[in-house]
Image 1 (cartoon, rainbow, N blue to C red):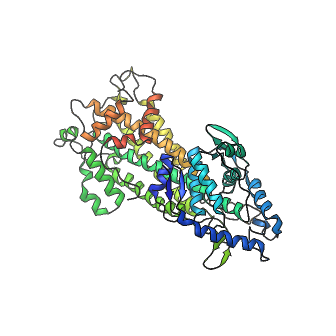
Image 2: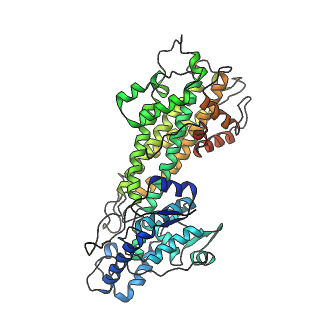
Image 3: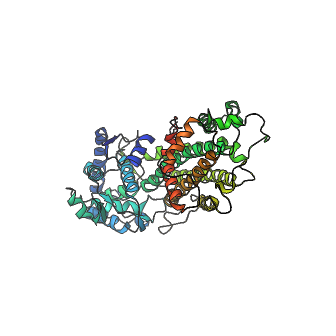
Length: 511
Protein backbone atom coordinates (compact mmCIF):
# COMPACT_ATOMS: atom_id res chain seq x y z
CA UNK A 1 0.00 0.00 0.00
CA UNK A 2 1.40 3.37 -1.03
CA UNK A 3 1.64 5.96 1.74
CA UNK A 4 0.64 9.46 0.61
CA UNK A 5 2.44 12.21 2.51
CA UNK A 6 1.67 15.92 2.70
CA UNK A 7 4.90 17.96 2.92
CA UNK A 8 5.00 19.97 6.12
CA UNK A 9 2.38 17.80 7.85
CA UNK A 10 4.00 14.37 8.18
CA UNK A 11 3.75 12.70 11.59
CA UNK A 12 6.05 10.39 13.53
CA UNK A 13 3.56 7.58 12.90
CA UNK A 14 3.88 8.15 9.13
CA UNK A 15 7.65 8.04 9.36
CA UNK A 16 7.58 4.93 11.55
CA UNK A 17 5.47 3.18 8.92
CA UNK A 18 8.11 3.91 6.30
CA UNK A 19 10.81 2.51 8.60
CA UNK A 20 9.05 -0.59 9.89
CA UNK A 21 6.70 -1.49 7.05
CA UNK A 22 8.80 -0.60 3.97
CA UNK A 23 5.87 1.07 2.22
CA UNK A 24 6.22 3.02 -1.05
CA UNK A 25 5.76 6.76 -0.64
CA UNK A 26 4.16 9.44 -2.80
CA UNK A 27 3.60 13.12 -2.18
CA UNK A 28 0.10 14.50 -2.03
CA UNK A 29 -0.47 16.13 -5.42
CA UNK A 30 -1.54 19.33 -3.68
CA UNK A 31 2.20 19.99 -3.30
CA UNK A 32 2.78 20.33 -7.04
CA UNK A 33 1.78 23.98 -7.65
CA UNK A 34 4.32 25.26 -5.12
CA UNK A 35 7.01 22.99 -6.57
CA UNK A 36 6.28 24.24 -10.09
CA UNK A 37 6.38 27.90 -9.03
CA UNK A 38 9.78 27.47 -7.42
CA UNK A 39 11.13 25.63 -10.47
CA UNK A 40 9.97 28.49 -12.71
CA UNK A 41 11.77 30.99 -10.50
CA UNK A 42 15.00 29.00 -10.79
CA UNK A 43 14.71 28.80 -14.58
CA UNK A 44 14.29 32.56 -14.74
CA UNK A 45 17.31 33.12 -12.51
CA UNK A 46 19.45 30.79 -14.61
CA UNK A 47 18.64 32.84 -17.70
CA UNK A 48 19.33 36.17 -15.99
CA UNK A 49 22.48 38.17 -15.33
CA UNK A 50 22.26 38.38 -11.53
CA UNK A 51 24.56 35.87 -9.78
CA UNK A 52 22.56 33.34 -7.75
CA UNK A 53 24.49 30.83 -5.68
CA UNK A 54 24.48 27.33 -7.14
CA UNK A 55 22.32 28.38 -10.10
CA UNK A 56 24.85 30.28 -12.20
CA UNK A 57 27.84 30.20 -9.85
CA UNK A 58 30.21 27.59 -8.47
CA UNK A 59 29.82 26.05 -5.03
CA UNK A 60 31.28 26.63 -1.59
CA UNK A 61 34.53 28.56 -1.83
CA UNK A 62 33.93 28.78 -5.60
CA UNK A 63 30.69 30.74 -5.19
CA UNK A 64 32.25 33.83 -6.78
CA UNK A 65 32.95 32.00 -10.05
CA UNK A 66 30.22 32.72 -12.63
CA UNK A 67 28.96 29.91 -14.85
CA UNK A 68 27.58 30.56 -18.33
CA UNK A 69 23.91 29.64 -18.99
CA UNK A 70 24.98 27.01 -21.51
CA UNK A 71 26.97 25.23 -18.78
CA UNK A 72 24.35 25.08 -16.01
CA UNK A 73 23.37 21.47 -16.75
CA UNK A 74 27.03 20.40 -16.79
CA UNK A 75 27.54 22.30 -13.54
CA UNK A 76 24.87 20.22 -11.80
CA UNK A 77 26.10 16.93 -13.23
CA UNK A 78 29.66 17.70 -12.18
CA UNK A 79 28.45 18.65 -8.72
CA UNK A 80 26.85 15.25 -8.18
CA UNK A 81 29.71 13.19 -9.56
CA UNK A 82 32.40 15.15 -7.72
CA UNK A 83 30.53 14.81 -4.45
CA UNK A 84 30.20 11.02 -4.70
CA UNK A 85 33.03 10.59 -2.22
CA UNK A 86 31.36 8.36 0.36
CA UNK A 87 33.33 5.45 1.81
CA UNK A 88 32.65 2.41 3.93
CA UNK A 89 29.91 -0.18 3.91
CA UNK A 90 26.64 0.68 2.14
CA UNK A 91 23.77 1.71 4.38
CA UNK A 92 20.86 -0.71 4.70
CA UNK A 93 18.04 -0.69 2.18
CA UNK A 94 15.65 0.50 4.89
CA UNK A 95 17.85 3.46 5.79
CA UNK A 96 18.26 4.40 2.13
CA UNK A 97 14.51 4.27 1.51
CA UNK A 98 13.73 6.40 4.56
CA UNK A 99 16.34 8.88 3.36
CA UNK A 100 14.70 9.02 -0.08
CA UNK A 101 11.28 9.60 1.47
CA UNK A 102 12.67 12.44 3.58
CA UNK A 103 14.19 14.05 0.49
CA UNK A 104 10.78 13.89 -1.20
CA UNK A 105 9.24 15.69 1.77
CA UNK A 106 11.87 18.42 1.70
CA UNK A 107 11.58 19.00 -2.06
CA UNK A 108 7.80 18.92 -1.76
CA UNK A 109 7.78 22.07 0.37
CA UNK A 110 8.14 24.05 -2.84
CA UNK A 111 11.24 26.01 -1.87
CA UNK A 112 13.93 24.02 -3.70
CA UNK A 113 13.31 24.77 -7.36
CA UNK A 114 13.36 21.25 -8.77
CA UNK A 115 11.08 20.02 -11.53
CA UNK A 116 8.18 17.76 -10.62
CA UNK A 117 9.58 15.10 -12.96
CA UNK A 118 12.47 14.48 -10.57
CA UNK A 119 10.10 14.07 -7.65
CA UNK A 120 8.13 11.54 -9.69
CA UNK A 121 11.30 9.63 -10.53
CA UNK A 122 12.22 9.40 -6.86
CA UNK A 123 8.70 8.21 -6.05
CA UNK A 124 8.87 5.59 -8.80
CA UNK A 125 12.21 4.34 -7.54
CA UNK A 126 10.66 3.81 -4.11
CA UNK A 127 7.64 2.08 -5.63
CA UNK A 128 9.61 -0.23 -7.91
CA UNK A 129 12.39 -0.98 -5.44
CA UNK A 130 15.35 0.77 -7.06
CA UNK A 131 17.50 1.61 -4.05
CA UNK A 132 20.72 3.60 -4.48
CA UNK A 133 23.87 2.13 -2.95
CA UNK A 134 24.96 4.76 -0.43
CA UNK A 135 28.26 4.46 1.47
CA UNK A 136 27.81 5.10 5.18
CA UNK A 137 30.73 7.47 5.81
CA UNK A 138 31.65 10.88 4.50
CA UNK A 139 29.18 13.42 5.86
CA UNK A 140 29.99 15.98 8.55
CA UNK A 141 26.36 17.08 8.74
CA UNK A 142 26.66 20.61 7.39
CA UNK A 143 26.20 22.12 3.97
CA UNK A 144 24.00 19.06 3.87
CA UNK A 145 24.83 15.37 4.00
CA UNK A 146 26.67 15.99 0.77
CA UNK A 147 28.43 12.72 -0.03
CA UNK A 148 25.61 10.28 0.83
CA UNK A 149 22.99 12.43 -0.87
CA UNK A 150 25.20 12.66 -3.95
CA UNK A 151 25.35 8.86 -4.14
CA UNK A 152 21.57 8.77 -3.92
CA UNK A 153 21.17 11.42 -6.61
CA UNK A 154 23.71 9.85 -8.96
CA UNK A 155 21.27 7.04 -9.71
CA UNK A 156 18.59 9.52 -10.82
CA UNK A 157 20.93 10.74 -13.55
CA UNK A 158 22.05 7.24 -14.56
CA UNK A 159 25.30 7.02 -12.61
CA UNK A 160 26.34 5.32 -9.38
CA UNK A 161 24.98 1.97 -8.27
CA UNK A 162 21.61 0.71 -7.12
CA UNK A 163 20.14 -2.45 -5.67
CA UNK A 164 17.25 -3.92 -7.66
CA UNK A 165 15.62 -7.29 -7.05
CA UNK A 166 18.54 -8.47 -4.97
CA UNK A 167 21.25 -7.42 -7.43
CA UNK A 168 23.66 -4.50 -7.25
CA UNK A 169 23.74 -2.89 -10.68
CA UNK A 170 24.99 0.29 -12.36
CA UNK A 171 22.42 3.01 -11.75
CA UNK A 172 21.36 3.29 -15.38
CA UNK A 173 20.87 -0.48 -15.65
CA UNK A 174 18.83 -0.67 -12.43
CA UNK A 175 16.54 2.09 -13.69
CA UNK A 176 16.13 0.41 -17.06
CA UNK A 177 15.24 -2.95 -15.53
CA UNK A 178 12.54 -1.19 -13.48
CA UNK A 179 11.18 0.54 -16.59
CA UNK A 180 12.52 3.96 -15.56
CA UNK A 181 14.76 6.50 -17.27
CA UNK A 182 17.38 8.85 -15.82
CA UNK A 183 16.68 12.58 -15.97
CA UNK A 184 19.44 15.15 -16.68
CA UNK A 185 19.58 17.82 -14.01
CA UNK A 186 18.58 21.40 -14.67
CA UNK A 187 19.65 24.60 -12.86
CA UNK A 188 20.15 24.14 -9.09
CA UNK A 189 18.60 20.65 -9.11
CA UNK A 190 21.78 18.85 -8.15
CA UNK A 191 22.37 21.30 -5.34
CA UNK A 192 18.78 20.89 -4.12
CA UNK A 193 19.25 17.13 -3.90
CA UNK A 194 22.55 17.08 -2.01
CA UNK A 195 21.98 20.03 0.32
CA UNK A 196 19.90 18.80 3.21
CA UNK A 197 19.92 16.69 6.35
CA UNK A 198 18.08 13.63 5.07
CA UNK A 199 20.88 11.12 5.68
CA UNK A 200 21.42 12.26 9.27
CA UNK A 201 17.69 12.54 9.91
CA UNK A 202 16.96 9.08 8.50
CA UNK A 203 19.48 7.47 10.81
CA UNK A 204 18.33 9.52 13.78
CA UNK A 205 14.70 8.57 13.15
CA UNK A 206 15.58 4.91 12.75
CA UNK A 207 17.54 5.06 16.01
CA UNK A 208 14.63 6.81 17.69
CA UNK A 209 12.00 4.28 16.59
CA UNK A 210 14.15 1.31 17.58
CA UNK A 211 15.10 2.99 20.86
CA UNK A 212 11.44 3.43 21.74
CA UNK A 213 10.82 -0.26 21.15
CA UNK A 214 13.74 -1.00 23.44
CA UNK A 215 12.32 1.32 26.10
CA UNK A 216 8.97 -0.50 25.92
CA UNK A 217 10.81 -3.80 26.23
CA UNK A 218 12.80 -2.48 29.19
CA UNK A 219 9.59 -1.74 31.08
CA UNK A 220 8.53 -5.36 30.62
CA UNK A 221 11.88 -6.93 31.52
CA UNK A 222 12.17 -4.69 34.57
CA UNK A 223 8.74 -5.81 35.77
CA UNK A 224 9.86 -9.42 35.35
CA UNK A 225 13.05 -8.69 37.27
CA UNK A 226 11.08 -7.09 40.09
CA UNK A 227 9.04 -10.25 40.57
CA UNK A 228 12.07 -12.51 40.09
CA UNK A 229 13.86 -10.96 43.10
CA UNK A 230 10.58 -10.52 44.98
CA UNK A 231 10.86 -6.76 44.83
CA UNK A 232 8.38 -4.32 46.30
CA UNK A 233 5.70 -2.55 44.28
CA UNK A 234 5.30 0.14 46.94
CA UNK A 235 7.60 2.53 44.99
CA UNK A 236 5.09 2.36 42.12
CA UNK A 237 2.34 4.11 44.08
CA UNK A 238 0.86 6.71 41.71
CA UNK A 239 0.97 9.51 44.31
CA UNK A 240 4.78 9.29 44.46
CA UNK A 241 5.08 10.00 40.77
CA UNK A 242 2.37 12.62 40.49
CA UNK A 243 4.12 14.56 43.25
CA UNK A 244 7.13 14.86 40.97
CA UNK A 245 5.15 15.40 37.78
CA UNK A 246 7.37 14.06 34.98
CA UNK A 247 5.19 12.45 32.32
CA UNK A 248 7.55 9.60 31.45
CA UNK A 249 8.02 8.68 35.09
CA UNK A 250 4.26 8.66 35.69
CA UNK A 251 3.66 6.51 32.61
CA UNK A 252 6.48 4.08 33.43
CA UNK A 253 5.20 3.58 36.97
CA UNK A 254 1.66 3.06 35.70
CA UNK A 255 2.77 0.48 33.14
CA UNK A 256 4.84 -1.39 35.74
CA UNK A 257 1.84 -1.46 38.08
CA UNK A 258 -0.27 -2.95 35.30
CA UNK A 259 2.39 -5.54 34.52
CA UNK A 260 2.65 -6.68 38.13
CA UNK A 261 -1.00 -6.45 39.10
CA UNK A 262 -2.25 -9.85 40.28
CA UNK A 263 1.17 -11.41 40.83
CA UNK A 264 0.97 -14.20 43.41
CA UNK A 265 4.71 -13.82 43.90
CA UNK A 266 4.21 -10.21 44.94
CA UNK A 267 1.38 -11.00 47.34
CA UNK A 268 3.41 -13.79 48.98
CA UNK A 269 5.91 -11.39 50.56
CA UNK A 270 3.80 -8.32 51.16
CA UNK A 271 3.77 -9.19 54.88
CA UNK A 272 6.81 -10.16 56.96
CA UNK A 273 9.49 -9.24 54.38
CA UNK A 274 12.57 -8.20 56.37
CA UNK A 275 13.87 -5.99 53.55
CA UNK A 276 12.98 -2.33 53.94
CA UNK A 277 13.99 -1.04 50.50
CA UNK A 278 15.09 -2.53 47.20
CA UNK A 279 18.24 -1.41 45.39
CA UNK A 280 17.85 1.57 43.07
CA UNK A 281 17.80 -0.60 39.95
CA UNK A 282 14.44 -1.92 41.18
CA UNK A 283 13.11 0.99 43.21
CA UNK A 284 14.00 3.78 40.75
CA UNK A 285 12.92 2.15 37.50
CA UNK A 286 10.20 4.74 36.75
CA UNK A 287 12.55 7.60 37.50
CA UNK A 288 15.27 6.29 35.16
CA UNK A 289 13.39 4.63 32.30
CA UNK A 290 10.68 7.29 32.50
CA UNK A 291 13.27 10.04 32.20
CA UNK A 292 14.74 8.27 29.17
CA UNK A 293 11.27 8.15 27.64
CA UNK A 294 10.93 11.90 28.15
CA UNK A 295 14.30 12.47 26.48
CA UNK A 296 13.30 10.28 23.52
CA UNK A 297 10.11 12.27 23.11
CA UNK A 298 12.04 15.55 23.14
CA UNK A 299 14.28 14.19 20.39
CA UNK A 300 11.20 12.97 18.54
CA UNK A 301 9.72 16.47 18.43
CA UNK A 302 12.92 17.82 16.90
CA UNK A 303 13.11 15.06 14.30
CA UNK A 304 9.46 15.37 13.32
CA UNK A 305 10.01 19.06 12.62
CA UNK A 306 13.20 18.29 10.69
CA UNK A 307 11.49 15.62 8.59
CA UNK A 308 9.00 18.26 7.42
CA UNK A 309 11.60 20.95 6.76
CA UNK A 310 13.05 22.45 3.60
CA UNK A 311 16.78 22.10 4.23
CA UNK A 312 18.65 22.86 1.02
CA UNK A 313 20.26 26.10 -0.12
CA UNK A 314 19.53 28.57 -1.57
CA UNK A 315 15.79 28.52 -0.94
CA UNK A 316 13.20 29.91 -3.32
CA UNK A 317 10.85 32.22 -1.41
CA UNK A 318 8.19 32.51 -4.07
CA UNK A 319 5.86 34.80 -2.15
CA UNK A 320 8.67 37.27 -1.53
CA UNK A 321 9.97 36.80 -5.07
CA UNK A 322 13.54 36.11 -3.99
CA UNK A 323 16.09 33.31 -3.97
CA UNK A 324 18.15 33.58 -0.81
CA UNK A 325 21.10 31.75 0.70
CA UNK A 326 20.74 30.52 4.25
CA UNK A 327 21.87 27.67 6.45
CA UNK A 328 19.01 25.21 6.82
CA UNK A 329 21.34 22.44 5.64
CA UNK A 330 23.21 22.63 8.98
CA UNK A 331 22.20 19.53 10.92
CA UNK A 332 22.77 20.93 14.42
CA UNK A 333 19.20 20.11 15.58
CA UNK A 334 19.61 16.54 14.33
CA UNK A 335 22.99 16.25 16.03
CA UNK A 336 21.54 17.34 19.36
CA UNK A 337 18.62 14.92 18.94
CA UNK A 338 20.99 12.04 18.15
CA UNK A 339 23.07 12.79 21.23
CA UNK A 340 19.92 12.83 23.36
CA UNK A 341 18.82 9.46 21.99
CA UNK A 342 22.28 8.05 22.66
CA UNK A 343 22.12 9.17 26.31
CA UNK A 344 18.72 7.55 26.75
CA UNK A 345 19.94 4.28 25.23
CA UNK A 346 22.99 4.21 27.47
CA UNK A 347 20.98 4.84 30.64
CA UNK A 348 18.26 2.29 29.90
CA UNK A 349 21.03 -0.25 29.42
CA UNK A 350 22.95 0.83 32.50
CA UNK A 351 20.07 0.24 34.92
CA UNK A 352 19.03 -2.97 33.13
CA UNK A 353 22.55 -4.33 33.53
CA UNK A 354 22.38 -3.72 37.28
CA UNK A 355 19.16 -5.73 37.43
CA UNK A 356 20.90 -8.61 35.67
CA UNK A 357 23.79 -8.36 38.15
CA UNK A 358 21.29 -8.37 41.02
CA UNK A 359 19.56 -11.54 39.83
CA UNK A 360 22.69 -13.62 39.35
CA UNK A 361 24.15 -12.67 42.76
CA UNK A 362 22.89 -15.02 45.50
CA UNK A 363 23.71 -12.42 48.15
CA UNK A 364 21.26 -9.92 46.64
CA UNK A 365 18.68 -12.00 44.74
CA UNK A 366 16.61 -13.06 47.75
CA UNK A 367 17.27 -16.80 47.70
CA UNK A 368 17.65 -17.39 43.99
CA UNK A 369 20.44 -19.87 43.19
CA UNK A 370 23.81 -18.48 42.15
CA UNK A 371 23.83 -17.47 38.50
CA UNK A 372 20.29 -18.78 38.14
CA UNK A 373 21.28 -22.40 37.58
CA UNK A 374 19.74 -25.31 39.50
CA UNK A 375 23.16 -26.83 40.11
CA UNK A 376 25.71 -24.03 40.74
CA UNK A 377 29.31 -25.10 40.63
CA UNK A 378 28.94 -27.90 38.13
CA UNK A 379 27.02 -25.36 36.02
CA UNK A 380 27.82 -21.69 35.50
CA UNK A 381 24.34 -20.72 34.35
CA UNK A 382 24.08 -17.08 33.35
CA UNK A 383 27.45 -16.07 34.85
CA UNK A 384 29.06 -15.00 31.59
CA UNK A 385 25.83 -13.72 30.07
CA UNK A 386 25.93 -11.10 32.85
CA UNK A 387 29.56 -10.32 31.95
CA UNK A 388 28.46 -9.79 28.35
CA UNK A 389 25.86 -7.26 29.48
CA UNK A 390 28.58 -5.40 31.37
CA UNK A 391 30.68 -5.25 28.20
CA UNK A 392 27.74 -3.99 26.14
CA UNK A 393 26.78 -1.45 28.79
CA UNK A 394 30.33 -0.07 28.85
CA UNK A 395 30.46 0.11 25.06
CA UNK A 396 27.23 2.09 24.99
CA UNK A 397 28.53 4.49 27.61
CA UNK A 398 31.51 5.26 25.37
CA UNK A 399 29.30 5.59 22.31
CA UNK A 400 27.02 7.99 24.19
CA UNK A 401 29.69 10.69 24.30
CA UNK A 402 28.38 13.75 22.41
CA UNK A 403 29.27 14.14 18.76
CA UNK A 404 27.60 17.50 18.11
CA UNK A 405 30.37 19.31 20.01
CA UNK A 406 33.07 17.91 17.73
CA UNK A 407 33.14 20.47 14.94
CA UNK A 408 35.99 20.91 12.49
CA UNK A 409 36.36 23.36 9.56
CA UNK A 410 35.92 21.96 6.04
CA UNK A 411 35.86 23.20 2.43
CA UNK A 412 38.74 25.66 2.71
CA UNK A 413 37.17 27.18 5.87
CA UNK A 414 33.98 28.19 4.08
CA UNK A 415 32.12 25.58 6.10
CA UNK A 416 33.87 26.37 9.34
CA UNK A 417 31.38 24.88 11.80
CA UNK A 418 29.75 21.50 11.21
CA UNK A 419 27.36 19.35 13.25
CA UNK A 420 28.81 15.85 12.91
CA UNK A 421 25.18 14.70 13.01
CA UNK A 422 25.71 11.96 10.43
CA UNK A 423 27.92 9.66 12.48
CA UNK A 424 26.19 10.84 15.65
CA UNK A 425 22.99 9.37 14.21
CA UNK A 426 24.64 6.33 12.64
CA UNK A 427 26.02 5.13 15.97
CA UNK A 428 22.48 4.78 17.32
CA UNK A 429 21.91 1.55 15.39
CA UNK A 430 24.87 -0.10 17.09
CA UNK A 431 23.75 1.20 20.46
CA UNK A 432 20.23 -0.18 19.99
CA UNK A 433 21.66 -3.58 19.08
CA UNK A 434 23.71 -3.52 22.28
CA UNK A 435 20.72 -2.49 24.35
CA UNK A 436 18.46 -5.15 22.84
CA UNK A 437 21.05 -7.75 23.84
CA UNK A 438 21.31 -6.41 27.38
CA UNK A 439 17.53 -6.53 27.71
CA UNK A 440 17.47 -9.97 26.10
CA UNK A 441 19.77 -11.28 28.83
CA UNK A 442 17.61 -9.59 31.45
CA UNK A 443 14.59 -11.30 29.93
CA UNK A 444 16.27 -14.70 30.17
CA UNK A 445 17.47 -14.15 33.73
CA UNK A 446 14.18 -12.76 34.98
CA UNK A 447 12.20 -15.61 33.40
CA UNK A 448 14.53 -18.11 35.03
CA UNK A 449 14.19 -16.35 38.37
CA UNK A 450 10.40 -16.32 38.24
CA UNK A 451 10.34 -20.01 37.38
CA UNK A 452 12.45 -20.72 40.45
CA UNK A 453 9.63 -19.18 42.54
CA UNK A 454 7.19 -21.96 41.57
CA UNK A 455 4.60 -22.90 42.68
CA UNK A 456 4.14 -19.15 43.11
CA UNK A 457 3.30 -17.47 39.80
CA UNK A 458 3.66 -14.00 38.39
CA UNK A 459 0.88 -11.80 36.98
CA UNK A 460 -1.22 -12.62 33.94
CA UNK A 461 0.54 -10.16 31.59
CA UNK A 462 3.96 -11.42 32.64
CA UNK A 463 2.88 -15.06 32.31
CA UNK A 464 2.02 -14.19 28.70
CA UNK A 465 5.54 -12.86 28.25
CA UNK A 466 7.08 -16.01 29.70
CA UNK A 467 4.95 -18.14 27.39
CA UNK A 468 6.13 -16.15 24.36
CA UNK A 469 9.76 -16.45 25.42
CA UNK A 470 9.51 -20.19 26.01
CA UNK A 471 8.24 -20.68 22.47
CA UNK A 472 11.74 -19.68 21.37
CA UNK A 473 14.10 -20.36 24.29
CA UNK A 474 13.85 -23.25 26.75
CA UNK A 475 14.43 -22.92 30.48
CA UNK A 476 18.12 -23.30 31.32
CA UNK A 477 18.87 -26.50 33.20
CA UNK A 478 22.27 -27.99 32.51
CA UNK A 479 24.74 -25.62 30.87
CA UNK A 480 24.41 -25.42 27.09
CA UNK A 481 25.69 -23.38 24.17
CA UNK A 482 24.07 -20.05 25.11
CA UNK A 483 24.89 -17.66 22.27
CA UNK A 484 21.79 -18.57 20.19
CA UNK A 485 19.57 -18.06 23.26
CA UNK A 486 20.95 -14.56 23.73
CA UNK A 487 20.40 -13.63 20.10
CA UNK A 488 16.85 -15.01 20.07
CA UNK A 489 15.96 -13.08 23.22
CA UNK A 490 17.45 -9.90 21.75
CA UNK A 491 15.39 -10.43 18.60
CA UNK A 492 12.20 -10.73 20.64
CA UNK A 493 13.02 -7.43 22.34
CA UNK A 494 13.96 -5.60 19.13
CA UNK A 495 10.91 -6.78 17.21
CA UNK A 496 8.61 -5.55 19.97
CA UNK A 497 7.14 -9.04 20.42
CA UNK A 498 7.93 -9.20 24.13
CA UNK A 499 6.29 -5.86 24.88
CA UNK A 500 3.22 -6.75 22.82
CA UNK A 501 2.94 -10.14 24.55
CA UNK A 502 1.79 -8.42 27.74
CA UNK A 503 -1.48 -7.56 26.04
CA UNK A 504 -1.33 -4.16 27.74
CA UNK A 505 -1.52 -0.74 26.12
CA UNK A 506 2.08 0.35 25.59
CA UNK A 507 3.38 3.90 26.10
CA UNK A 508 3.43 5.72 22.76
CA UNK A 509 6.29 7.80 21.41
CA UNK A 510 3.96 10.50 20.14
CA UNK A 511 2.06 10.86 23.43
